Length: 277
Image (cartoon, rainbow, N blue to C red):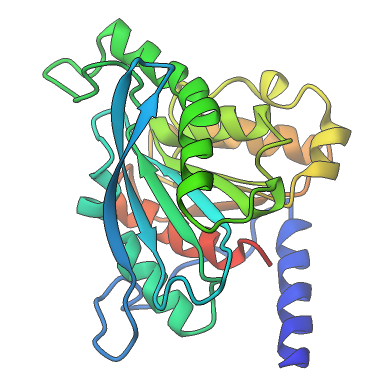
């Protein structure tokens, strides 16, 4: 076991210092298939009071198999895209299946995963016009809701480790931009940050990382991934190139694919396997 831990630590270190992508990381066949031979976690819907929005808001929470056996758990905040809501990952990405399988194989640390609605406004449904200005603005407003309302609620309600080293944030598309903006903008809150096919709401690298040395010192993992045929790839590429130029350790994974759950599920599989080690 000790030898395995050493090898795993070395592997993660190699990943974090491999600024150029090689090789492409692809999940094995069946990684997102429901297995009857492994223990299963559960998905619950929770409601939390939001002082930011002035309403009671909803989120989905994955708790791992045998919860709460581990005592206290690290937490991943997993964000959806511009047309989704708190159920988008559940409906399209099967995160509970991916995590169950990874944990059963010893490839992921048991963790809690919180899937909120990242559109912080009283009527937070996508609606007919997902690009309405007030709805786009609500994705930015969610930063305050996340920091001031949701995270404190989770830490009062669940047995979690309430420190930056045990908090991660990641998301797909619009949620990928949120994850990069909020994670890199709040390094005292998050040490693990992942953007999957991040959208145009992603701030420029200079805004995200005004102090490269501080970011490099504080981050435990920065994950950037995208499909090679995704027309939004430029937002992932520019952040990678900035990190490369400023010697900020990160993982840059460009895989065959477009802007869809095939790519995002692989991002989730790879990212969660590296977390909290």
